[in-house]
Amino acid sequence: MNLGARAVTVARMASPSSGVQAPSRGWFITTIVVLFCLLAFSDFTKAIQYARDPAVGGLVILGHKFHGVAKNVVLGPLFGIFLLTYAWGLWKMRRWVAPISVFYAFYVPVNMVLFWSLHQLPPPTAKFIVMYLFLSLTGSIGTALYLAYHRDRLS
Image 1 (cartoon, rainbow, N blue to C red):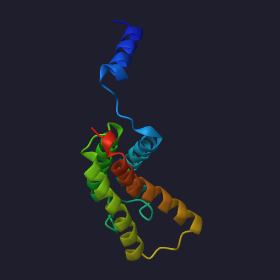
Image 2 (tube, rainbow, N blue to C red; image 1 turned 90 degrees about the vertical axis):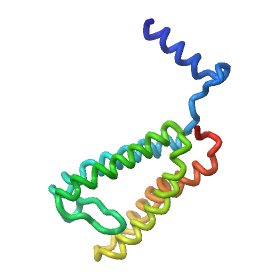
Image 3 (cartoon, rainbow, N blue to C red; image 1 turned 120 degrees about the horizontal axis):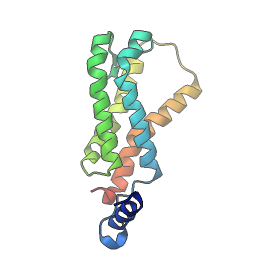
Image 4 (tube, rainbow, N blue to C red; image 1 turned 30 degrees about the vertical axis):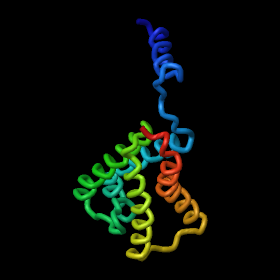
């Protein structure tokens, strides 16, 4: 079967008349999946980031920044795998991703508050804080709310 015939066959399989529909994820979930993949890549490279600049690099879990390349080599990929699993579930619009989204919606704000309260850092600019909060809370809480509102799309 040539490539054109295969594309027609796949299109027929996913057509509404065949009874099998691809899940509708929309632009929001597509964007979130891309961002989670980028975040996962960042977690996979935490050891390199830490080795390059320990003051900036390193994984933060529940407000605690992990120091040392070895800790980041182990924990970074674990969190990267978690985020890739979450992204894959979102991409496929699977029902099992809903509890993960609720967990992540609570984890991100707690992690942020604990990190900012445990570490004495120079205050960032207001513009940075607003942008960081917008992206992190939209990605965590916004995704959970989106899935709750569109739970009928989950398979």
